[in-house]
Length: 428
Ligand code: NAD
Image (tube, rainbow, N blue to C red; front, top):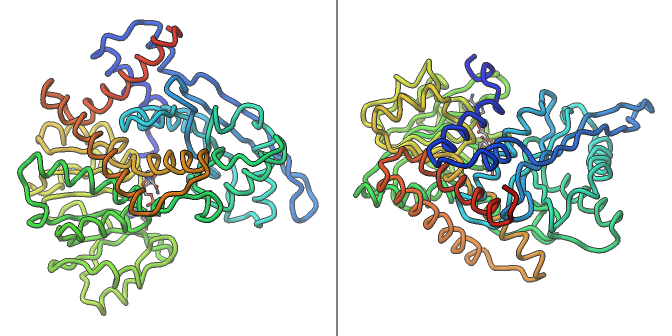
Protein backbone atom coordinates (compact mmCIF):
# COMPACT_ATOMS: atom_id res chain seq x y z
CA UNK A 1 0.00 0.00 0.00
CA UNK A 2 1.39 3.34 -1.04
CA UNK A 3 0.49 5.01 2.26
CA UNK A 4 3.10 3.06 4.23
CA UNK A 5 5.95 3.96 1.86
CA UNK A 6 6.00 7.61 3.01
CA UNK A 7 7.94 8.84 5.99
CA UNK A 8 5.67 11.75 6.97
CA UNK A 9 8.54 13.76 8.45
CA UNK A 10 10.50 13.52 5.20
CA UNK A 11 7.38 14.56 3.27
CA UNK A 12 6.86 17.55 5.61
CA UNK A 13 10.50 18.58 5.27
CA UNK A 14 10.54 18.28 1.49
CA UNK A 15 7.34 20.35 1.23
CA UNK A 16 9.01 22.93 3.46
CA UNK A 17 12.25 22.93 1.42
CA UNK A 18 10.30 23.56 -1.78
CA UNK A 19 8.54 26.61 -0.35
CA UNK A 20 11.66 27.86 1.46
CA UNK A 21 13.39 27.94 -1.93
CA UNK A 22 10.43 29.79 -3.50
CA UNK A 23 10.54 32.34 -0.67
CA UNK A 24 14.34 32.53 -0.80
CA UNK A 25 14.46 32.14 2.98
CA UNK A 26 17.77 32.77 4.74
CA UNK A 27 19.77 29.68 5.64
CA UNK A 28 19.30 30.26 9.41
CA UNK A 29 15.51 30.61 9.15
CA UNK A 30 15.39 27.49 6.98
CA UNK A 31 17.37 25.45 9.44
CA UNK A 32 15.21 26.60 12.34
CA UNK A 33 11.88 25.92 10.64
CA UNK A 34 12.64 22.58 8.98
CA UNK A 35 12.86 20.82 12.35
CA UNK A 36 11.09 21.02 15.73
CA UNK A 37 12.39 23.50 18.32
CA UNK A 38 11.90 21.09 21.21
CA UNK A 39 11.12 17.41 21.71
CA UNK A 40 10.30 15.56 24.89
CA UNK A 41 10.56 11.77 24.87
CA UNK A 42 9.63 10.03 28.09
CA UNK A 43 8.37 6.88 29.75
CA UNK A 44 5.06 6.53 31.55
CA UNK A 45 4.99 3.68 34.08
CA UNK A 46 1.47 2.42 34.79
CA UNK A 47 0.30 -0.19 37.28
CA UNK A 48 -2.08 -2.21 35.12
CA UNK A 49 -5.32 -3.78 36.35
CA UNK A 50 -3.56 -7.15 36.73
CA UNK A 51 -1.02 -5.59 39.14
CA UNK A 52 1.94 -5.60 36.72
CA UNK A 53 3.82 -2.42 35.82
CA UNK A 54 3.80 -1.57 32.12
CA UNK A 55 5.96 1.20 30.74
CA UNK A 56 4.52 3.25 27.86
CA UNK A 57 6.49 5.62 25.63
CA UNK A 58 5.25 9.20 25.31
CA UNK A 59 6.24 12.23 23.23
CA UNK A 60 5.60 15.93 22.96
CA UNK A 61 7.09 17.73 20.01
CA UNK A 62 6.93 21.53 19.81
CA UNK A 63 7.73 22.51 16.27
CA UNK A 64 7.53 26.28 16.61
CA UNK A 65 6.03 28.86 18.96
CA UNK A 66 7.20 32.14 17.40
CA UNK A 67 3.60 33.24 16.70
CA UNK A 68 2.11 32.09 20.01
CA UNK A 69 1.79 29.08 22.31
CA UNK A 70 2.35 25.77 20.54
CA UNK A 71 -0.91 23.97 19.76
CA UNK A 72 -1.69 20.40 18.79
CA UNK A 73 -3.34 17.14 19.69
CA UNK A 74 -2.25 14.07 21.64
CA UNK A 75 -2.61 10.76 19.81
CA UNK A 76 -2.91 7.32 21.40
CA UNK A 77 -1.83 4.83 18.77
CA UNK A 78 -0.05 1.45 18.87
CA UNK A 79 2.00 2.30 15.74
CA UNK A 80 2.90 5.85 16.75
CA UNK A 81 6.36 6.97 15.65
CA UNK A 82 8.29 10.07 16.60
CA UNK A 83 8.65 10.97 12.92
CA UNK A 84 4.87 11.03 12.53
CA UNK A 85 4.58 13.28 15.58
CA UNK A 86 7.33 15.57 14.22
CA UNK A 87 5.59 15.91 10.86
CA UNK A 88 2.22 16.56 12.45
CA UNK A 89 3.69 19.22 14.74
CA UNK A 90 5.15 21.00 11.71
CA UNK A 91 1.83 20.85 9.86
CA UNK A 92 0.13 22.33 12.93
CA UNK A 93 2.47 25.34 12.74
CA UNK A 94 1.48 25.94 9.11
CA UNK A 95 -2.22 25.30 9.79
CA UNK A 96 -2.42 27.87 12.62
CA UNK A 97 -0.44 30.31 10.54
CA UNK A 98 -2.48 30.00 7.34
CA UNK A 99 -5.71 30.88 9.20
CA UNK A 100 -3.79 33.59 11.06
CA UNK A 101 -4.47 32.53 14.64
CA UNK A 102 -1.78 33.46 17.20
CA UNK A 103 -0.60 29.92 17.90
CA UNK A 104 2.34 27.74 16.96
CA UNK A 105 2.50 24.02 16.26
CA UNK A 106 2.94 20.94 18.43
CA UNK A 107 1.85 17.31 18.56
CA UNK A 108 2.07 14.58 21.13
CA UNK A 109 1.46 10.92 21.47
CA UNK A 110 1.66 7.75 23.48
CA UNK A 111 2.41 4.35 21.95
CA UNK A 112 -0.61 2.42 23.22
CA UNK A 113 -3.86 0.90 22.02
CA UNK A 114 -6.85 2.19 24.01
CA UNK A 115 -8.95 -0.75 22.67
CA UNK A 116 -6.96 -2.97 25.03
CA UNK A 117 -6.84 -0.64 28.04
CA UNK A 118 -9.39 -0.16 30.79
CA UNK A 119 -10.61 3.36 31.52
CA UNK A 120 -8.56 3.33 34.73
CA UNK A 121 -5.40 2.43 32.78
CA UNK A 122 -6.14 5.18 30.23
CA UNK A 123 -6.59 7.69 33.04
CA UNK A 124 -3.21 6.73 34.50
CA UNK A 125 -1.55 7.17 31.10
CA UNK A 126 -3.11 10.64 30.77
CA UNK A 127 -1.99 11.67 34.25
CA UNK A 128 1.47 10.16 33.70
CA UNK A 129 1.84 12.01 30.38
CA UNK A 130 1.12 15.33 32.13
CA UNK A 131 3.47 14.59 35.04
CA UNK A 132 6.33 14.15 32.58
CA UNK A 133 5.78 17.43 30.73
CA UNK A 134 3.93 19.61 33.28
CA UNK A 135 6.83 22.08 33.38
CA UNK A 136 7.05 22.33 29.59
CA UNK A 137 3.40 22.84 28.63
CA UNK A 138 0.72 25.29 29.82
CA UNK A 139 -1.86 27.86 28.69
CA UNK A 140 0.86 30.35 27.78
CA UNK A 141 3.34 27.91 26.23
CA UNK A 142 1.81 24.75 24.79
CA UNK A 143 -1.88 23.86 24.63
CA UNK A 144 -2.79 20.20 23.87
CA UNK A 145 -6.07 18.86 22.43
CA UNK A 146 -7.68 15.51 21.58
CA UNK A 147 -6.59 13.67 18.44
CA UNK A 148 -6.58 10.06 17.24
CA UNK A 149 -8.18 7.83 19.93
CA UNK A 150 -8.27 10.54 22.60
CA UNK A 151 -11.34 12.53 23.59
CA UNK A 152 -12.78 15.12 26.00
CA UNK A 153 -12.54 12.73 28.95
CA UNK A 154 -8.82 12.21 28.37
CA UNK A 155 -8.40 16.00 28.18
CA UNK A 156 -10.20 16.49 31.51
CA UNK A 157 -7.99 13.93 33.29
CA UNK A 158 -4.97 15.75 31.86
CA UNK A 159 -6.33 19.15 32.88
CA UNK A 160 -7.03 17.89 36.40
CA UNK A 161 -3.49 16.56 36.76
CA UNK A 162 -2.00 19.79 35.42
CA UNK A 163 -4.12 21.90 37.83
CA UNK A 164 -3.18 19.65 40.75
CA UNK A 165 0.52 20.06 39.99
CA UNK A 166 0.36 23.82 39.45
CA UNK A 167 -2.31 24.60 42.07
CA UNK A 168 -5.16 26.57 40.48
CA UNK A 169 -7.69 26.47 37.69
CA UNK A 170 -6.28 26.79 34.16
CA UNK A 171 -9.09 25.75 31.79
CA UNK A 172 -7.26 27.38 28.87
CA UNK A 173 -4.45 24.83 29.24
CA UNK A 174 -6.17 22.23 27.10
CA UNK A 175 -8.92 22.29 24.46
CA UNK A 176 -11.54 19.83 23.24
CA UNK A 177 -13.12 19.73 26.69
CA UNK A 178 -16.81 18.87 27.00
CA UNK A 179 -19.22 21.83 26.83
CA UNK A 180 -19.98 22.87 30.41
CA UNK A 181 -16.42 22.00 31.49
CA UNK A 182 -14.81 24.80 29.50
CA UNK A 183 -15.45 23.39 26.02
CA UNK A 184 -16.76 25.62 23.22
CA UNK A 185 -20.13 25.34 21.56
CA UNK A 186 -19.70 24.71 17.84
CA UNK A 187 -16.50 22.63 18.17
CA UNK A 188 -18.26 19.47 16.97
CA UNK A 189 -19.39 21.14 13.76
CA UNK A 190 -16.33 23.38 13.30
CA UNK A 191 -14.10 21.29 11.03
CA UNK A 192 -16.85 20.07 8.69
CA UNK A 193 -18.54 23.46 8.46
CA UNK A 194 -15.14 25.11 7.92
CA UNK A 195 -14.50 22.78 4.96
CA UNK A 196 -17.70 24.03 3.32
CA UNK A 197 -17.13 27.71 4.14
CA UNK A 198 -13.91 27.40 2.15
CA UNK A 199 -15.62 25.44 -0.64
CA UNK A 200 -18.41 28.05 -0.82
CA UNK A 201 -15.83 30.83 -1.32
CA UNK A 202 -13.93 28.79 -3.91
CA UNK A 203 -17.10 28.21 -5.93
CA UNK A 204 -17.90 31.94 -5.81
CA UNK A 205 -14.48 32.68 -7.28
CA UNK A 206 -15.11 30.14 -10.03
CA UNK A 207 -18.55 31.61 -10.70
CA UNK A 208 -20.25 28.32 -9.84
CA UNK A 209 -23.57 28.24 -8.00
CA UNK A 210 -23.23 25.69 -5.19
CA UNK A 211 -26.93 24.87 -5.58
CA UNK A 212 -26.14 23.48 -9.03
CA UNK A 213 -23.28 21.23 -7.90
CA UNK A 214 -22.97 17.57 -6.99
CA UNK A 215 -20.40 16.12 -4.60
CA UNK A 216 -18.97 12.76 -3.58
CA UNK A 217 -17.50 12.33 -0.09
CA UNK A 218 -15.08 9.87 1.46
CA UNK A 219 -15.79 9.32 5.16
CA UNK A 220 -18.87 9.65 7.30
CA UNK A 221 -17.36 10.62 10.64
CA UNK A 222 -17.18 13.96 12.39
CA UNK A 223 -15.68 15.99 9.53
CA UNK A 224 -17.65 14.39 6.70
CA UNK A 225 -21.07 14.48 8.39
CA UNK A 226 -20.91 18.18 9.18
CA UNK A 227 -19.45 18.96 5.77
CA UNK A 228 -22.38 17.14 4.14
CA UNK A 229 -24.80 18.98 6.44
CA UNK A 230 -23.48 22.45 5.55
CA UNK A 231 -23.13 21.59 1.86
CA UNK A 232 -26.76 20.46 1.61
CA UNK A 233 -27.95 23.45 3.67
CA UNK A 234 -26.37 25.66 1.00
CA UNK A 235 -28.23 23.74 -1.73
CA UNK A 236 -25.46 21.38 -2.91
CA UNK A 237 -26.32 17.76 -3.70
CA UNK A 238 -24.17 14.96 -2.21
CA UNK A 239 -24.69 11.79 -4.23
CA UNK A 240 -22.16 9.35 -2.75
CA UNK A 241 -20.56 8.59 0.61
CA UNK A 242 -17.75 6.10 1.23
CA UNK A 243 -17.00 4.70 4.66
CA UNK A 244 -15.39 1.80 6.48
CA UNK A 245 -17.35 -1.25 7.63
CA UNK A 246 -15.94 -2.40 10.96
CA UNK A 247 -17.46 -5.90 10.76
CA UNK A 248 -16.33 -6.62 7.17
CA UNK A 249 -13.01 -4.77 7.51
CA UNK A 250 -13.75 -3.23 4.12
CA UNK A 251 -14.88 0.11 2.69
CA UNK A 252 -18.11 0.68 0.73
CA UNK A 253 -19.60 3.54 -1.23
CA UNK A 254 -23.29 4.35 -0.77
CA UNK A 255 -24.82 6.11 -3.75
CA UNK A 256 -28.19 7.77 -4.30
CA UNK A 257 -28.21 9.78 -7.50
CA UNK A 258 -31.14 11.90 -6.33
CA UNK A 259 -29.03 12.97 -3.34
CA UNK A 260 -28.26 11.20 -0.06
CA UNK A 261 -30.45 11.85 2.97
CA UNK A 262 -28.18 12.95 5.81
CA UNK A 263 -30.56 12.14 8.64
CA UNK A 264 -31.54 8.74 7.25
CA UNK A 265 -27.87 7.79 6.88
CA UNK A 266 -27.00 9.12 10.33
CA UNK A 267 -29.76 6.89 11.67
CA UNK A 268 -27.97 3.77 10.38
CA UNK A 269 -24.38 4.79 11.22
CA UNK A 270 -22.36 3.34 14.10
CA UNK A 271 -20.17 5.37 16.43
CA UNK A 272 -17.11 4.78 14.20
CA UNK A 273 -18.81 6.32 11.16
CA UNK A 274 -19.65 2.99 9.48
CA UNK A 275 -23.00 2.58 7.64
CA UNK A 276 -25.19 -0.54 7.87
CA UNK A 277 -25.27 -1.99 4.31
CA UNK A 278 -28.53 -3.87 4.33
CA UNK A 279 -30.46 -1.02 5.91
CA UNK A 280 -28.90 1.35 3.36
CA UNK A 281 -30.14 -0.92 0.52
CA UNK A 282 -33.62 -0.85 2.07
CA UNK A 283 -33.46 2.95 1.94
CA UNK A 284 -32.71 2.85 -1.79
CA UNK A 285 -28.91 3.21 -1.79
CA UNK A 286 -26.68 1.41 -4.27
CA UNK A 287 -23.82 -0.25 -2.38
CA UNK A 288 -20.60 0.00 -4.41
CA UNK A 289 -16.91 -0.79 -3.73
CA UNK A 290 -15.12 1.50 -1.26
CA UNK A 291 -13.13 3.50 -3.81
CA UNK A 292 -16.13 4.12 -6.13
CA UNK A 293 -16.60 7.51 -4.42
CA UNK A 294 -13.56 8.72 -6.39
CA UNK A 295 -14.99 7.75 -9.80
CA UNK A 296 -18.35 9.52 -9.60
CA UNK A 297 -19.40 12.03 -12.28
CA UNK A 298 -19.62 14.90 -9.83
CA UNK A 299 -18.31 18.47 -9.66
CA UNK A 300 -16.71 18.19 -6.23
CA UNK A 301 -14.75 15.52 -4.36
CA UNK A 302 -14.43 15.78 -0.58
CA UNK A 303 -11.91 13.27 0.85
CA UNK A 304 -12.70 13.43 4.59
CA UNK A 305 -11.62 10.05 5.95
CA UNK A 306 -7.92 9.24 6.04
CA UNK A 307 -4.48 10.13 4.70
CA UNK A 308 -3.07 8.92 1.32
CA UNK A 309 -6.49 8.03 -0.15
CA UNK A 310 -5.93 9.72 -3.50
CA UNK A 311 -2.67 8.21 -4.69
CA UNK A 312 -0.66 7.12 -7.71
CA UNK A 313 -2.77 4.02 -8.23
CA UNK A 314 -6.21 5.68 -8.30
CA UNK A 315 -5.76 9.35 -9.22
CA UNK A 316 -6.46 8.59 -12.91
CA UNK A 317 -9.93 7.35 -11.93
CA UNK A 318 -11.10 10.83 -11.00
CA UNK A 319 -13.94 11.70 -13.39
CA UNK A 320 -13.53 14.45 -16.00
CA UNK A 321 -16.46 16.31 -14.46
CA UNK A 322 -14.54 17.04 -11.23
CA UNK A 323 -13.50 20.69 -10.99
CA UNK A 324 -12.86 21.07 -7.25
CA UNK A 325 -11.25 18.83 -4.62
CA UNK A 326 -11.81 19.98 -1.04
CA UNK A 327 -9.46 18.16 1.35
CA UNK A 328 -11.28 17.56 4.63
CA UNK A 329 -8.90 14.86 5.91
CA UNK A 330 -5.27 15.46 6.80
CA UNK A 331 -2.96 14.48 3.93
CA UNK A 332 -5.56 12.66 1.77
CA UNK A 333 -3.50 13.20 -1.40
CA UNK A 334 -0.03 11.73 -1.92
CA UNK A 335 2.62 13.95 -3.59
CA UNK A 336 2.42 11.78 -6.74
CA UNK A 337 -1.37 12.20 -7.05
CA UNK A 338 -1.06 15.89 -6.21
CA UNK A 339 1.11 16.41 -9.29
CA UNK A 340 -1.53 14.80 -11.52
CA UNK A 341 -4.31 16.93 -9.99
CA UNK A 342 -2.20 20.04 -10.51
CA UNK A 343 -1.57 19.15 -14.19
CA UNK A 344 -5.29 18.56 -14.74
CA UNK A 345 -6.06 22.06 -13.48
CA UNK A 346 -8.47 20.87 -10.79
CA UNK A 347 -9.03 23.60 -8.17
CA UNK A 348 -7.57 21.92 -5.05
CA UNK A 349 -8.39 23.33 -1.64
CA UNK A 350 -5.49 22.08 0.55
CA UNK A 351 -6.05 20.25 3.82
CA UNK A 352 -4.27 22.55 6.23
CA UNK A 353 -6.34 25.51 5.03
CA UNK A 354 -9.63 23.70 4.46
CA UNK A 355 -9.79 21.65 7.67
CA UNK A 356 -8.40 24.39 9.94
CA UNK A 357 -11.90 25.08 11.32
CA UNK A 358 -11.24 22.64 14.17
CA UNK A 359 -8.11 24.33 15.45
CA UNK A 360 -9.67 27.75 14.89
CA UNK A 361 -12.55 26.76 17.16
CA UNK A 362 -10.04 25.36 19.67
CA UNK A 363 -8.42 28.78 19.68
CA UNK A 364 -11.86 30.28 20.36
CA UNK A 365 -12.22 27.77 23.23
CA UNK A 366 -8.92 28.95 24.67
CA UNK A 367 -9.96 32.60 24.37
CA UNK A 368 -13.29 31.87 26.11
CA UNK A 369 -11.56 29.94 28.90
CA UNK A 370 -8.91 32.59 29.42
CA UNK A 371 -11.54 35.34 29.71
CA UNK A 372 -14.03 33.08 31.57
CA UNK A 373 -16.78 34.27 29.21
CA UNK A 374 -18.49 31.74 26.94
CA UNK A 375 -20.08 32.60 23.61
CA UNK A 376 -23.34 31.40 22.01
CA UNK A 377 -23.02 28.84 19.23
CA UNK A 378 -24.10 31.29 16.51
CA UNK A 379 -21.37 33.68 17.60
CA UNK A 380 -18.73 30.93 17.47
CA UNK A 381 -19.81 29.78 14.00
CA UNK A 382 -20.04 33.34 12.66
CA UNK A 383 -16.49 34.06 13.86
CA UNK A 384 -15.36 30.77 12.32
CA UNK A 385 -16.91 31.67 8.98
CA UNK A 386 -15.14 35.04 9.01
CA UNK A 387 -11.75 33.42 9.75
CA UNK A 388 -12.09 30.68 7.11
CA UNK A 389 -13.39 33.13 4.50
CA UNK A 390 -10.53 35.55 4.95
CA UNK A 391 -7.94 32.75 5.04
CA UNK A 392 -9.25 31.43 1.72
CA UNK A 393 -9.29 34.94 0.22
CA UNK A 394 -5.64 35.54 1.15
CA UNK A 395 -4.48 32.20 -0.29
CA UNK A 396 -6.56 32.54 -3.43
CA UNK A 397 -5.37 36.09 -3.99
CA UNK A 398 -1.72 35.02 -3.80
CA UNK A 399 -2.37 31.99 -6.01
CA UNK A 400 -3.93 34.24 -8.67
CA UNK A 401 -1.25 36.92 -8.47
CA UNK A 402 1.71 34.56 -8.60
CA UNK A 403 0.05 31.82 -10.65
CA UNK A 404 0.60 29.25 -7.91
CA UNK A 405 -1.15 25.98 -7.17
CA UNK A 406 -3.41 26.55 -4.13
CA UNK A 407 -1.41 24.16 -1.91
CA UNK A 408 1.81 26.03 -2.74
CA UNK A 409 0.15 29.42 -2.15
CA UNK A 410 -1.15 28.27 1.25
CA UNK A 411 2.36 27.09 2.21
CA UNK A 412 3.91 30.35 1.03
CA UNK A 413 1.55 32.41 3.22
CA UNK A 414 1.89 30.13 6.26
CA UNK A 415 5.67 29.75 6.14
CA UNK A 416 6.23 33.41 5.37
CA UNK A 417 4.25 34.47 8.46
CA UNK A 418 6.23 32.14 10.73
CA UNK A 419 9.54 33.18 9.14
CA UNK A 420 8.62 36.82 9.73
CA UNK A 421 7.82 36.12 13.42
CA UNK A 422 11.14 34.33 13.81
CA UNK A 423 13.00 37.28 12.26
CA UNK A 424 11.11 39.90 14.30
CA UNK A 425 11.97 38.02 17.50
CA UNK A 426 15.61 38.04 16.44
CA UNK A 427 15.87 34.25 16.46
CA UNK A 428 17.35 33.98 12.98
P1 NAD B 1 -13.78 9.91 12.25
O1 NAD B 1 -13.07 8.81 12.92
O2 NAD B 1 -14.92 10.58 12.95
O3 NAD B 1 -14.35 9.40 10.83
C1 NAD B 1 -13.56 8.74 9.90
C2 NAD B 1 -14.45 8.22 8.80
O4 NAD B 1 -13.64 7.67 7.77
C3 NAD B 1 -15.44 7.14 9.21
O5 NAD B 1 -16.68 7.36 8.60
C4 NAD B 1 -14.81 5.86 8.64
O6 NAD B 1 -15.79 4.88 8.32
C5 NAD B 1 -14.19 6.42 7.38
N1 NAD B 1 -13.14 5.58 6.82
C6 NAD B 1 -12.08 5.01 7.46
N2 NAD B 1 -11.35 4.30 6.60
C7 NAD B 1 -11.94 4.42 5.39
C8 NAD B 1 -11.67 3.92 4.10
N3 NAD B 1 -10.60 3.15 3.85
N4 NAD B 1 -12.51 4.24 3.08
C9 NAD B 1 -13.58 5.02 3.30
N5 NAD B 1 -13.90 5.52 4.51
C10 NAD B 1 -13.09 5.23 5.53
O7 NAD B 1 -12.66 10.97 11.86
P2 NAD B 1 -12.81 12.53 11.64
O8 NAD B 1 -12.65 13.24 12.93
O9 NAD B 1 -14.01 12.80 10.79
O10 NAD B 1 -11.48 12.85 10.80
C11 NAD B 1 -11.39 12.55 9.41
C12 NAD B 1 -10.10 13.15 8.86
O11 NAD B 1 -10.10 14.56 9.10
C13 NAD B 1 -8.80 12.64 9.47
O12 NAD B 1 -7.80 12.70 8.48
C14 NAD B 1 -8.49 13.67 10.55
O13 NAD B 1 -7.11 13.70 10.87
C15 NAD B 1 -8.92 14.93 9.83
N6 NAD B 1 -9.23 16.07 10.71
C16 NAD B 1 -10.18 15.98 11.65
C17 NAD B 1 -10.48 17.09 12.44
C18 NAD B 1 -11.57 17.04 13.46
O14 NAD B 1 -11.86 18.10 14.04
N7 NAD B 1 -12.24 15.94 13.67
C19 NAD B 1 -9.75 18.29 12.26
C20 NAD B 1 -8.78 18.34 11.26
C21 NAD B 1 -8.53 17.24 10.48
